[in-house]
Picture (cartoon, rainbow, N blue to C red):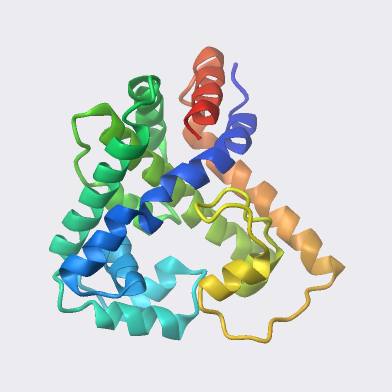
Length: 249
């Protein structure tokens, strides 16, 4: 029997890197130019628009790791672009990025084939953005399909990580400051660098050893919460998934 927990832990870095790659890509930048939206307004509108034309606090509740006022400001700034159109455009950027970034990857079709049952097998509890994106159709070509599936698994982990962070008693800012951030499209970045990128106001606190321990606990809990989704894969498929994610990155 495959060790789903080990699989979840093994692929989190690669999926974190690839699953959010399109969000800081030339394709996303082109959307900002064509829609007239700022980068963060487009980000919230496109990523979170799957939740509908909702009050900004709904987006605050789902996004978790950004300052509430920053989320509200940018969600409202994007109101001129209907959510259905925003999601369509953002998904299109994801697909176009996938075709450019993964079009030459010979394992794209097989990796998509392995990730699709993981996505289908996952429980949506605690992961509303994942649930919204899972309701969207997948494109037919392998690189674009893989890009959307990578994004989906990343959103699943993001939602479950928020659950784990809050369950341990950490604040979103503390969790951000204490993370290694080695599995993000930004590359290896310090906690303070990512906190600034997320627009958390300075100065930042210096969490003590007990908060560091809680951050490690939250990471382990996230892995455990992710494991059931990967339980659909057998031992051979799990090993193949880990190998292909490593190669794709």
